[in-house]
Length: 249
Image (cartoon, rainbow, N blue to C red; front, side):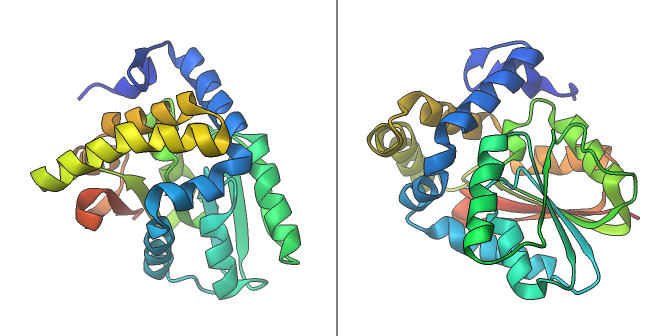
């Protein structure tokens, strides 16, 4: 399997790895202020149920360290905080400062000051080896320039015995559902992006990036190649999204 093939495309557009990182940063600069409302509109609120499911699988506990990568506006980290706020270390890391700013504002509105906010790339996380108990990434891995590098970084920062959780759009299994999902994705989502966020292009990229993301079994293999054991995935909503899980021995 070719290492990091996704580094050479931005949606359907061929690019260099350096160009891709800048283009992805530009997308999230553009959509940051409308990111949360767009998630609700695009998924009919179902993304909230998927994120709830991830955190139930994480099973947050006091005294642990949680790292949420590409966690910008805080959806996963806030759910963890509601379970163990003040009794665990929760770090949000995101490439995009605008996304982090939105998340910090949301935390301040809730009166939470104990979350840690780090600007950083999933491919080079500014944390020591073996320093976190749980790594989560929700709807962020498909935007990473080098997925294999990001998976290796996740393995590096996890402590032995630590767990990796990835929630990401995936490959629909049912042909009828896949056809309906394609019609909705390629037609409705860019239009919603134009009406709500005044940004059709960014949402066209986000739809294209979903179709370019590795299918479930391919991502499972890439996680195993990064060193994870007990790798498994479960499909959500017929494979529209999936949760991948790995363990560091």
